[in-house]
Picture 1 (tube, rainbow, N blue to C red):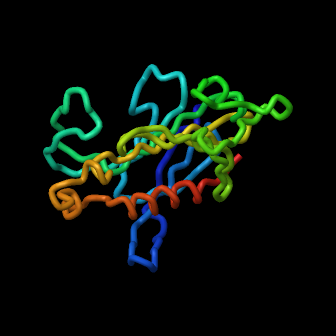
Picture 2: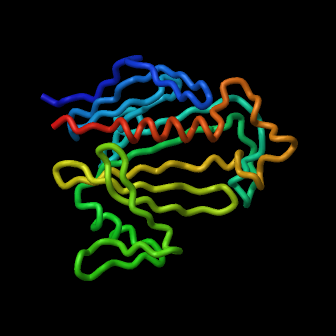
Length: 211
């Protein structure tokens, strides 16, 4: 019998006293890989079954967008037009193997490894940092330019697996792109950077192993 992933909720409330943020949470449970986490109800979560029938890895994507026709600030070649602003995009992928081996296979430019421990060497300009929150530990790697890029998390799971999270930067909110008196800030339903950071922290810190 195949265990299916399931979402339940809204299950609880969180409040950030500094800015009065309150949101309902859902619980996403991945029975196959043995973990669960909370995510805000206003975000949309899709799983590998919904994203692609041919994917080799278990993946999920958590997104949010609001309608607003504008020029894509991150397509610096064609400057294509977009109908929506995607103000939250966190994608997860699960791969077999230890974190250090997955990072080595990714072959990022300038990343060096300690020959004795096989761990990436944390240097000031390497783009790599150690990361720990709640039950998760591993590394983050940031790459991008002019507010367009991604923070990549490499996190250890049970059973010799690695969770790779890609937290995409929102180019519209970069100082170099948010012109015309911050034209995006007052759009109905928009998730601004401060709220986006709270949501990301809540998702990662709520992560629990179920196996």
